[in-house]
Amino acid sequence: MKIKFIGAARAVTGSCYSIQTKEASILVDCGMFQGTRDNEKRNARPFPFEPSEVQYLLLTHAHLDHSGLIPKLVKDGFRGKVLATSATMDLSNILLLDSAHIQELDAAWENKRRIRAGKSPVRPLYTVQEAADSLTCFQPVAYNEIQDLGNGITVRFRDAGHILGSAVVELWVKDDDDAEEKKLIFSGDLGQKDLPFIKDPTPIEEGDYIFVESTYGNRKHKGIQETMNEFTEAITESVKRGGNVIIPSFAVGRTQDILYILNRLSGEGKLDHLQVFVDSPMALQATRVMLKHPECMDSETLELVKRGYKSKLNLKFTGTVEDSMQINKVKSGAIIISSSGMCEAGRIRHHLKHNLWRPECSVIFVGYQAEGTLGRKIIEGEKRVKIFGEEIAVNARVYTIGGLSAHADRDELIDWLGKFKKKPKRVFVIHGEEETSLGFAETIRKQLNLDAFVPNNLEQIQI
Image (cartoon, rainbow, N blue to C red):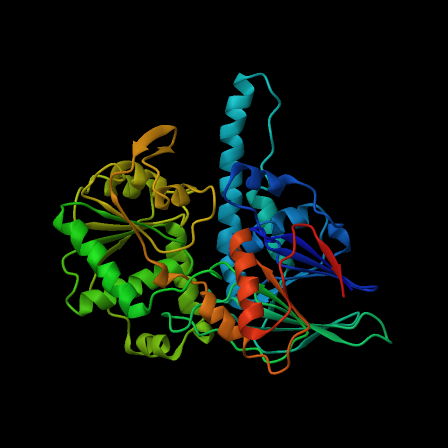
């Protein structure tokens, strides 16, 4: 059996792993590279395998750094099945079509420039129609059910506790009749314990080779109560100064977490008389999808839904561009939640343009900011940033609140790895910046006495 690390090796985005046996060709994830311009150029490169030969793609969850190249894969000849949980299928329907819309807009903007320069036009990475076509390849799987895929491959999806529908993939592989069956575990993205809405990650007790993410493998998150206190302080201080609070947020998962916490703080009397705008049509779609999938919710959230969710917030979801533009007329007392979470596209850039230069305002980051993104530049203290070609001063107060991250931290990752009853033969540390992955591998060796290895991009191993 050969395994190739096609993305997210010593990097955070582009998760994709190719498993080749004598009879089978399987992918785990097919994610988009995000962040720097050079990273994004990698999305257009040919796949380092033959798409038409791949029989199954096992999708851990819907985030684009795990799913975003599926339309390109189908466009390039894949005719197999994409196995994913039902909730992941529903979210992929939103995220992949939105991604395609952005690809088309970006290509149209670039072609205006190229035509003026007398250059030939470019095609989008994939179109909305191509994304829609790729969704016909999806096939739902239930958590905890073992499925025989044939050719010596068996799979089971377990709850990863990251976002709605996220999964850890257990893969049993037998290369030929004489070979010993080996069990591979792909963590996907593991979630924190005790966050709102979704269940905690499922502990796995057996596996020969583990492929574990390391996004936050070098740090520990603050506790939820400390996070809520910091969140309250950031908002109340900004309101006192007469400004707005801008929260760049992923539409799927994070936005719903923030609304849950804001409602709770309002109910406790800690936040009053605030206008809360959710300026993300995708967030509204994702919220509706979440309510369709009680099987993914934790017991506390299920009880809340049964009682009837009564929001005490002055909350408004904005649908149209005109509604979004009206928000920027509000100069104080507003909490504006908008995507994208890393500030790379979408309506959040307009809100930053109108508020980032104002010292009375605040920007609260509640999720990971990949290298090269606008969000990363702001949290690293750049004094000026470019938004829509205009230089904007960074005068607003900037808060980074890690306790709301949908990723497990170092200690939670170690705890998850520590649940294996029999020592795995090797742990592959993936999906993290190089320094973080290397450091986390050393932590695994020291604390768990396991063989931990950090692969390079496009490295191939044989098991």
